[in-house]
Length: 210
Image (cartoon, rainbow, N blue to C red; front, side):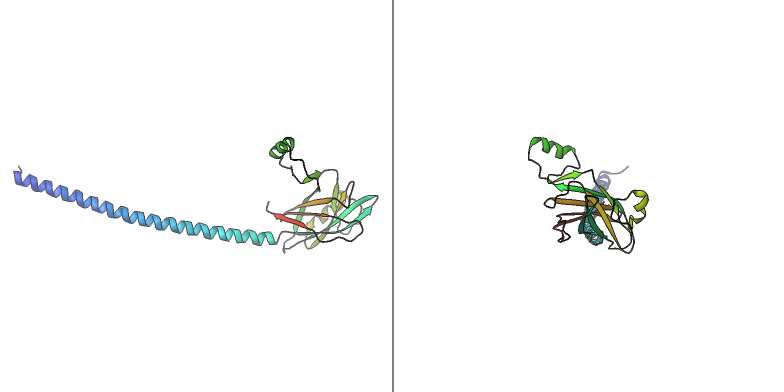
C-alpha cells in the first residue's frame, strides 16, 4: 500500500505529466497554426499564378481567333450580297460552322421587351436577328447563291476564304452585324455597308470563346 506521502508524490507526478502533455499539445497546435497559415498562403499564391497563366493563355488564344473583314457589296440577280473575308490566324485550319445576320434596331425600353430580354437568350436591345437570308463560302465558285452540295468543301479555311451573305431588303444606311461561328471561336463584326464598292474598315469587332 502506498503511504500518505507516496500517494501525494504519485499525484504530483500525474499532475506534472498532464502539464507536460498540455504544453506539448499547445506547442504542436502553434506549429500546426503556423503551418496552416503557410500552406494557405502557398495555396493562394499558387492559385494566383494559375489564374494569371490561364488569363495569358486566353489572351493568346483570343489573338488567334479568325479575323473578319467586309470587302464589298455586290448585286447578283437583284439581290445584294455582302462579301466577307475570313483570315486564318493559325497554322491549323478551321471550319466555318455557321453565319448569323442581324440588323441594328433599337428596342423600346418597355415591360414587354424587358420580359423578352429575361426569357429569350437571343434577345438583343440593339439588334434584330434576320432569319430569311442565305450564305455560302465562295471558294472558286461564282458569286451566286450556292447550296451545301456545291460549296461545303470550302467550309474548311486554311488561309483566306470569302463568304457571301445575301441580305434581303438591303439598306446602305442600316448597320448590319455578322456573327461567324468557327471551330477556332466566334467573331462578330458590325458596320454600315456602301453598295458602291467603297467599304471602310469596321467600327465594331468582337471575339469570344465558345
